[in-house]
Length: 172
Image 1 (cartoon, rainbow, N blue to C red):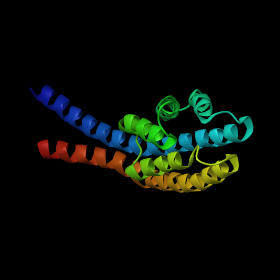
Image 2: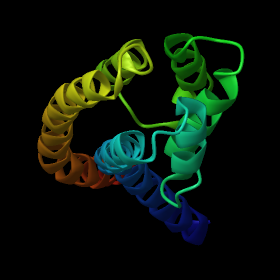
Image 3: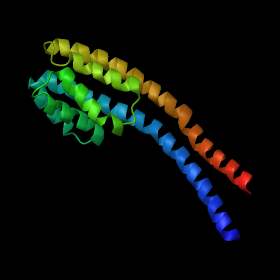
Image 4: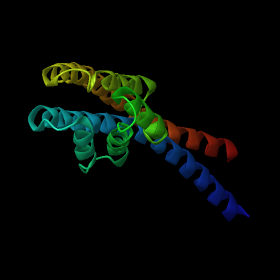
């Protein structure tokens, strides 16, 4: 009986520590996803500027670049949706379908949605200007995400372990 009690206490400690680590991973993944999105936007910008291909073709090419699968899916679904929707509607639909699988906050998603409002509406120079402005805003989001990661990642790891230890101490 005593053995089962210790096994239960170890399971409680392990479970609470794991929960803390899982929460901390969300902060890390948010920064990674935003950085990946930024990289793909830079590639998109270069492809628009230098290839002069239609937007749906450029989006399809960008989606085939091996990075974060969920971020690539946004580009792939946007390209597919462009067949019968405007760019803004296509991007919003793609984000709506993928946002549950991403670690992005609402403010990140709203920022990404603003990109759809400017793509495909002006000439190449106008799009380059709009994408540059978007990149500045996205870099600010990335910096905020990295600051939150530094602040909260260690805290949640420690908090999970501490809560587990408190529960174990109370149960002893």
